[in-house]
Length: 145
Picture 1 (cartoon, rainbow, N blue to C red):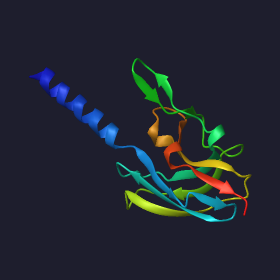
Picture 2 (picture 1 turned 60 degrees about the vertical axis):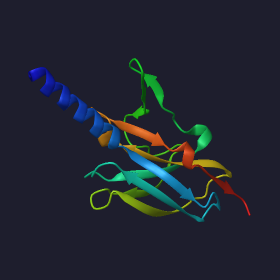
Picture 3 (picture 1 turned 30 degrees about the horizontal axis):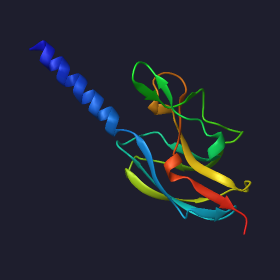
């Protein structure tokens, strides 16, 4: 009976972790000029009490998930939220009140290229530091008009 109870607890913990992620679902429009606005639809599988910083990053410079453990894929772990370099902070979101939201983001002066929305989640990683997660499926182009 104890083995069954332990198996149920483990299964529930794994299911809650799988549904608990933060997702960038869509970015529109697909093309924007620097200084223009994109609308980012973002959601979380669970209520988070920490605020999540959002960034724009050139797709070519975004950190990518890597293989870890036996058959797993892990998001990149970083020591802290980026403050300079390729990642440009553009907004902060909170999932305290709503699990789904659309955020209007003004694109900073960046060179023309393909960009992605990324976010830093300190609560998404056990221990010090956090995950730096990008969304290549919701990439957009910054163009000159």
